[in-house]
Length: 403
Ligand SMILES: Cc1ncc(COP(=O)(O)O)c(C=O)c1O
Image 1 (cartoon, helix red, strand yellow):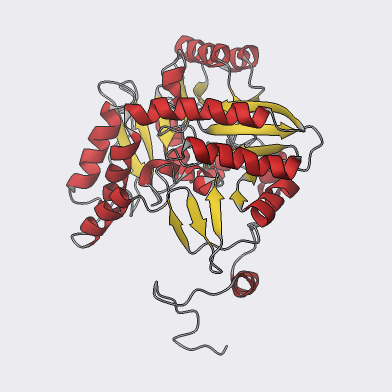
Image 2 (image 1 turned 90 degrees about the vertical axis):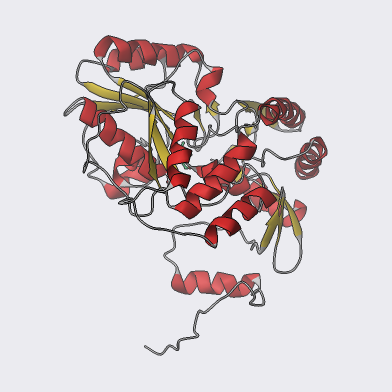
């Protein structure tokens, strides 16, 4: 081993390395789990990203629905800078106001009176925690999950993610997961007195933006009520204004017993949370669960600044309108066979397939960042601060690729 103290050193003032250098570092030093695009990013502002060579990109992926407020939103930057100079971290063994106010804010703006919040650091951790919550409420109970759902990569979350390619290499998984089609009849038949919870994304994002019909959610609600099971919505991607209202469940006839959130909550900083409605709020006991970093003052400050922006009803109304504009524009593109989604969570299918190739060409030829969720499907998740003109611009760039 030959190395020096400066090998690998970096600071924000360093001259940015070029893409080839980064690709070589990636090959040599990171475990190869990501199929990264041939793109680097050094700076972001609003809906725009810039690479080291100075090229500007229009970002219609938003860090996979993390940067809902846009990149480096000045209010988030300011909140974080002020808190960074005051207190970064202290542990959950003492009281800190940023996190406790954040819990108050989330609890009073989600599942109703008596709701309570547990903080963690990512979406998968929020799923792990909420599964423990439901199990605590019904000892040894099963979890009903739907085919092609996605809840994360840790063992519990992966066990709730019935996708062969993701699960098979890691078998045996956590037992106790019952997998069903995402239909009212299938969920109704699967929920029994042994069920601890039904866990469902109200719109399945990672598998291609499939909106779960209201009748399915209502059937799940009724089945859970009949059998004393918890209905849990995974709002990690759908929440925080992405689909219009603050939470997707507000657009449905159903209120879940618990829900998860993460992604956009920190405005770019890592945070997750699960929220327990009144029925489940006091199930977990002292010592049942914990996390070192969760709810640290610096992350909570980022989340407060982010919520200042994302809780604005005008933003919600605007997101719904802009989403319609985006779906309408995309539906007119040649070769597009189906468009799905709500608000600014949009997926579309290409009749001839080739979605991964289109995503690559979008970056290389049009400097438009988006992603393919499968061979046929492209997903668009622009920052919610996107403008009408930028929506039209993105549709125009797609038209140039598909025309
Ligand atoms: C619906 C849903 N649940 C859970 C997760 C996992 O979140 P994380 O990657 O933060 O662990 C994701 C991530 O894409 C998601 O979309």
